[in-house]
Amino acid sequence: MRRKMIVLFGLVMVMSMLVAACAPQSNVATNEVEDVVKEPVVEESEVEELVVEDPEVEEPQSGPVLPEVNPLELSGNIITAGSSTVFPLAERMAERFEDEGFAGNVTIDSIGSGAGYERFCVAGETDISNASRQIKDSEIASCEAIGRTPIEFRIGTDALAVVVSQENDFLTEVTMEELAMIFGEGFETWADVNPAWPNEKILRYIPGTDSGTFDFFVEEVFDKNNEPHLLASNTQLSEDDNVLVQGILGSPYAVGYFGYAYYAENQDTLRILVIDGVTAEQENVDNNTYPLSRPLFMYSDASIMREKPQVAGYLNFVLTFVNEEIVDVGYFPANEEALNKARQAWLDAMK
Image (cartoon, rainbow, N blue to C red; front, side, top):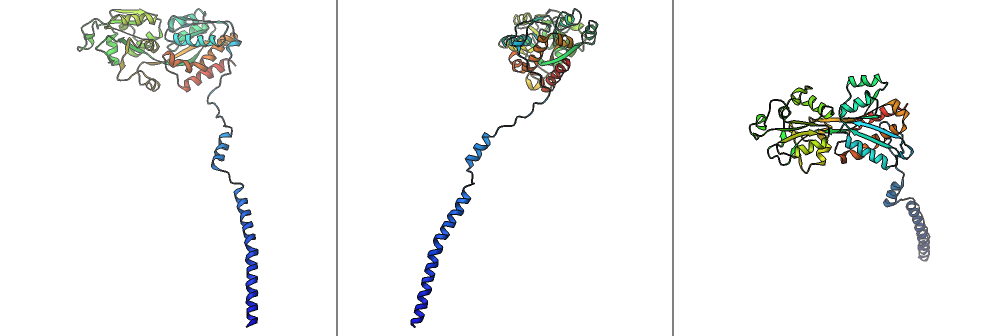
């Protein structure tokens, strides 16, 4: 009996020693494992900081890239002439060019696209021709006859505006067919076009025949035949769009058309007409659903651009920054494809 008690006691002692010995060793091992596991863990906020701090990779620009132009490094004169429609945009770009340091002078004569082409291609007097229509084959031939090859630079888009005074209380929209009657021969009064309209004479204010706006309107509304347009009664022509504005404001029975910028400048007193149910706005100009949307251009020549760095620099400047100014002037930006084509034409001219 005593022997059993001794053995039992011994077993109890051994068990106690084992428990005492194992307990602290187990705790130490557990703590060390936990420390090893916790050490490399990065908190979520730290991951976010790392992501923010990583440098961003810039995506490459699409399309041709023009060399940077510094107006401060350029001098000399730049002579331009042409479209009255392009005039306010050209004026804005020239002002910005000069504000940023150009030491020379940019001359801009508003004489109409046709007269501008004549000065550029026949007289050879200008460095750049501003235009609201594309150059004709006959005009290209005239340019080539004096050793010039015109290069086309698309700079924007116009929604040609057909307008009346806001005092007009009967007209808000028209069809293309009605435009041909309103501005055509044989329709003396508004009632002649539509019996619901007043029996009052139609007073017509239109651009001069040297104007690209006139040419475009005749092409779209009269299928290129300008005779009905020119023979319409009570028609006054002017190359100065501001004169047309004042004429339209003079009577609720007056009507006219010109570049959108001249409407935008006077929209508190003028009303632009909806045509074929389509309004003149960016989306409709981009998708060509507005019937009287049209491109705007500048033309020059490679030899002029290479001989006169100020001309090449100015055109570069226009193609680089025109979209920053064009909406404020009152026109619509050209799409990127058209601008890239113009920029590539600039690069090709300078080779």
